[in-house]
Length: 361
Image (cartoon, rainbow, N blue to C red):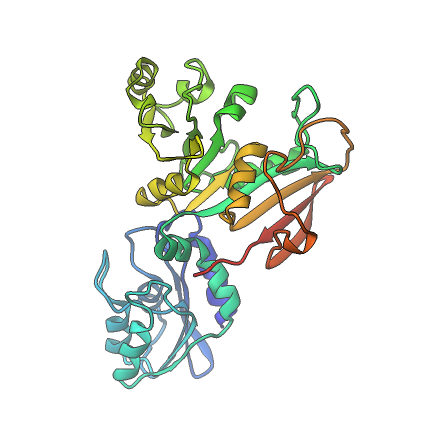
């Protein structure tokens, strides 16, 4: 039943952010009488939707919910109140609420009302489901997904800088589906200058239009690039220094619809931590990073990558920039950045390596 609730929750991916994905199944006398999930931000929560479609009275039934029911007033009333009013006998919870100000409050509220509560069922899967929300609410930064394509020998481009296309068409379609469910897509100005990308999701069912974010401390972004031309149809932000925000070029970019944000610097570079802080303040929970070696190395080196999608193409390039080559790396193999989970799958002729890194929340 909990696995079914988690599967239901995934239907909200790309629609509910910055809220977490949540699914709920209600049973009575061994039969499922109601199902529901959080469908979109600001809409009723999973428990409310499941109660609304019950085929019979849920009184005395069991609720399986992937995330601890809320006990506080927000955009919607507390789900705990609805469960208590429905005279539910038992609530089974996957993950506890990661918000430190309310964590455990839902379970306590239900127990105080005489409801039997069990927590931690399918906990790891339930926690993975809410990882973007948990990262945003506890660490005050987005959940960072780093994506890149490389050859078997670890090259992101040839010696001349050509990179179209290392990955196959099937892999590129998957990337467009990923773009369609994230809140923002980040690249460095070097990637914009070299590739002139659109950074939009194409030929997929759109769930949200991601904000395009460019790290550009020197304000090198070409006025005529695709991102600037499309700034009125897809939100576009340039992260730069306070000094550059008053430059004539900055004013011209703003007239064309580009937003500029002044960020702190660290060792003459934009502070990645400050960039992420600004994005979190804008309710960015899922951030896709499609930058080159410099941006990726900075994020990995500071332990700010939560998930990596690596498309490995069955080709050898030889000379050319290597993945993360801009960073200092580690001195010893035992200090290498090790993921907590690794999944591999075929993506056309490529191999997709998907890694999750442990977080402190």
